[in-house]
Image 1: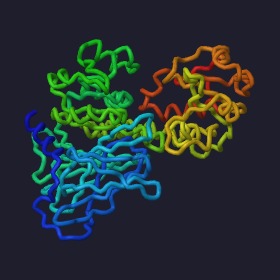
Image 2: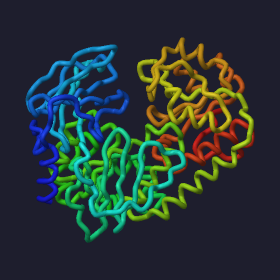
Image 3: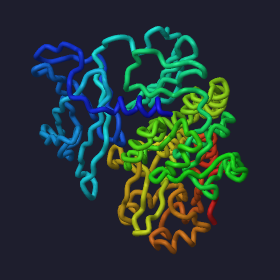
Image 4: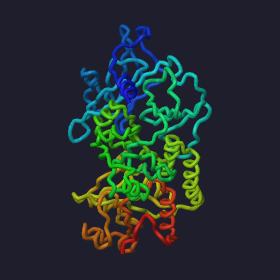
Length: 468
């Protein structure tokens, strides 16, 4: 434990010198730049490093005009604004990870978000002494990659986040390892899982026993193996993602915290976990553009748990379900997927969201277009929703956020406008199961069910309930 604490402390040390490198005045072209943190919805890049009197300065560009300042080692740096971007020039070390905060005013109040920057000059091989043998073949997932090295090592690279070296049991990380790479030493058998959607993927490869600590209470799990583990006491509730029970995590020897991107809204939690020597892995599967890309993250969890073959076999089964739909013409039926907020607004999924993509793959057309790019969900007034969905062929009420509804009359009671909707008049209204978001392992099955519904071939429904 102490070794991990010291290693993480060194990685987070805010060192302003350029280290032992002899730097010449001018512009430096780094071999690799990694910037992690935030939600991933704002593009961040560093294409230029300036050297002045032996000190390297990174020019960091946020693709948003809403960032006002950065804080590094208690020093504040004001943003310059150019062409709709926020630009910071920060003194940084090379070949070391450095953490800084950036304040955005895009939210209801100014909010500081933590970012980690690594600028590599290519000095030395980060995996010296190991030979890369192969790379994982991915079909749909774009958010990560895995390279396999001699001796059973695996290097996981999560897009827009971090790299992780999976070290086999009984072995050590290679000397000279890039300090920005997070070391995960197997066996990982005391995991804290706060990314609840990933539980289904662990269940799919019979690896729920690796999760000792849960960020979800027993009553909120719909996955039978998770419910049973918590009933048996082999899985313990360790607090939700924003308020973990740090003492319990340490007492149980937590060796990995798997978080959803919600952790990015409480950056201090992630920082404290790392300071305690607990590696943090952020599941970004929700950003996959293809629905089965979400399911393909099972392969990554197969690497972490040593169940690579089981993960491959499971994913192949889900992908095969989608292949059976190839060649079918689109039905051109429109589908509105939504729920009603307590404030009276209709909340729909963004047109780039995986739900919209699932509808398209199933042979339908998503009813909402022209929405804000990059938004997972969008609020609309009922008048706006009416104009977009009044003639939709199918209405699907999303019960994963708000409570499910049991009848069409209940929907009309929420807003009388629904009485005029085509899908209501024709009896094509459905409601999702409240645990749909936990079924990451069955996306292929969901798409197949949507296809059967749109083609009139749905005899039994597993994920949707038809409302009378």
